[in-house]
Amino acid sequence: TVNATPATAPTTQTPAQGFVKPPASTTPAMTPSASQGSIPTPNSSPLPRTHAATATTTPHPGQMTSAPETGSPAPATPPAAANAAEIDQAEERLMQTTARANTAKRGVAQIRNQQEASGLGMRGDIESAESRMDGYLNAAHDNLGRGNAAGATRNLDKAEIELSTLEKFLGH
Image (tube, rainbow, N blue to C red; front, side, top):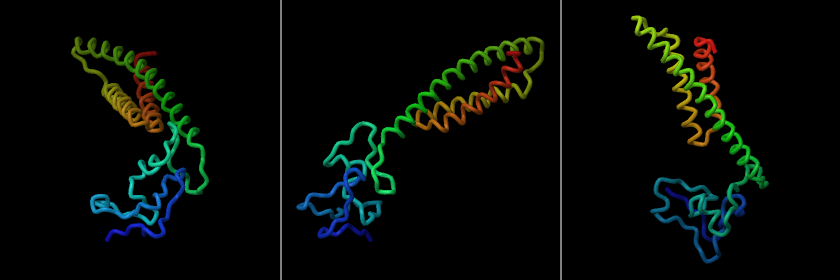
């Protein structure tokens, strides 16, 4: 069964909290197409949450449409700005680490070619470190594409450990 908010006493929150009070002439009844696959809560709006706040007010860029659980509106800019700064920092670190990694990979490739010419193979630990480093750098890049600065930072930390193994092998 699907419970909708009664039309006589709708429970709403202020636009800053993410919900908009429907006009008095509008009944917040759920239509079958709107209720497919979702179970509304007593405070649910007939519009999806992201559209409910824009029905009567347009938030400023970067402004959150829902308030913290405490009910007091908090400024949305500091967390967004902090996340943007973290992403910028992780992107810069990824660029620098990738440049170092490419240099190390060229050095390892040179030694690999020399050893193969002599009938020898590359050490397994070096091959593994290079492979793991590439995987961590790719994962960091993917994390940044999703806006996950913390995940990118963790993967960059791991990539740099593998990179330092390669640089030590190369004598850098």
